[in-house]
Image (cartoon, rainbow, N blue to C red; front, side, top):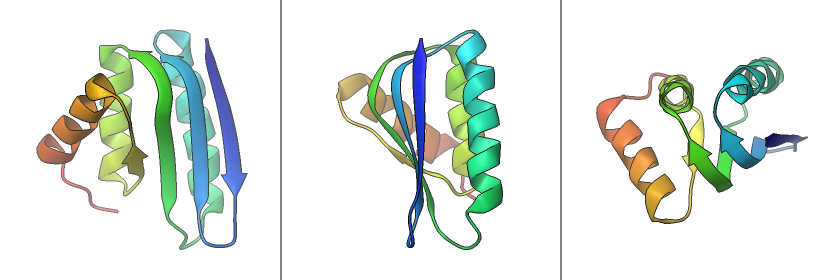
Length: 95
């Protein structure tokens, strides 16, 4: 299961996630990100991964694409920090 909360503030748009980025939830996250990205204007878009407990390969790939489009990935915990650092190293941001 994946809980997705989008918060549009004056200075940023943030997406807070809770649960797992796996299976059908990868598609749900992509839809939520597309919607948030479309409304962000010039504000930064931040993806809060601190409450994610599991991610599959498709989820990791999706996060890499988000990073390439300029989304800031916020993580905690050894596993998620390692995934985010790997994405930041291997996938340059263009956005």
